[in-house]
Image (cartoon, rainbow, N blue to C red; front, side):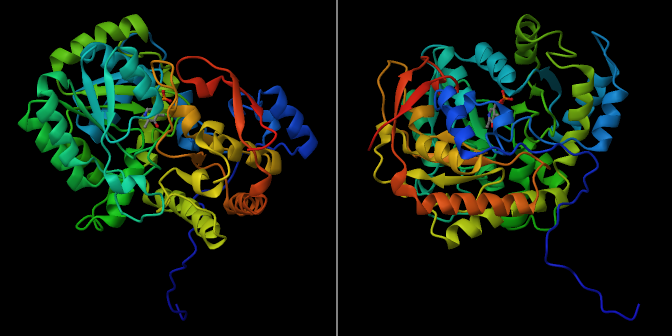
Length: 465
Ligand SMILES: *Cc1c(COP(=O)(O)O)cnc(C)c1O
């Protein structure tokens, strides 16, 4: 070749699109009516009324042609299906855990695990519990304790592993409460509720050592293990040349088990699993699984869904895919920061989080500033994000309210779904809304349920804040 070899700097979507789904364009007037009929709760909007849906990255991804092919070739036998064994083989290959129980989704695994190990008087430490995890811990009478490092509390502070567990706080908890009241230690990778921030391998290793020292099992909430491993690859000394799959194997090697939502880094539309090494606990979990989820070789999943996950777990670790995914979110973050929009820094693996507390200082926490911001994004641009703030976390088990640690709007990216021009549009809408921030007002809750109220609560906008 006469030309000099050249490495392009542009990170492109590492796929081409062979099947398309048209977007739904609507007017502001239409969106105003739609939001009002939804009780001003974006969870209650119809998908057809939304242009760009960043409510969640859970189960919303696009599957590959290989996954679809695997689904056609699935085995739907009730017991001992080939699809189950392919699923088990993938999970074992990546995690090394010997007992693999499929569940209908991540919370199915949480339900079985906490039912089997927790109860009143018990405490479950985690870097930050995800909402369903916290709800399952509390539902069985135990207490959920978040022990993430203090750096995580400052949205603008840059730290490579802002999802890390605070080892001193963890050691303190074990000392003051006693190992017998802590049935497991959990770490969530990446730390979803804390901004999609990663946990370092060193932190995982040290949590694991502490757990072993006190004979406490250590479980990962592994929903975004591949994204977490990518950040380790990019940011932690000694891992730049290690393939992501090897990083994943090392990560899981420090744990005794995991819960997993295959709707995240399983690259599937539904599914999950509970996996562990302890055969006695596994037997106990399996009998509850039969009651709640299904026979242990399908546990709430169709054979074709197990096929999709068996392949998807590997596709999630594809380094070109991970580079594109993390870059899309970082690119949006750069545009917003340049325009002065406060966001959690650095940007996370699956989502960008806007800091509504600093963006909307005129709306107090008990008028839900992040809720107001999420509704503003919808009205202005047909974009659906989700509040992660005092609506999601403010209601206490005793019925009182207290402010959440942060007031965030999460823009979660479905996997392999949106392209760079969608991200450009998104940046334009957020920046325009930031310019009109004074026009946003707070909200009042007029109807709510006692647990996970954000999914169904109804609201009214206030005249002024
Ligand atoms: C999504 C999620 C769960 C729950 O999984 P589902 O499949 O939604 O039931 C648990 N933990 C984390 C960190 C999650 O992101």
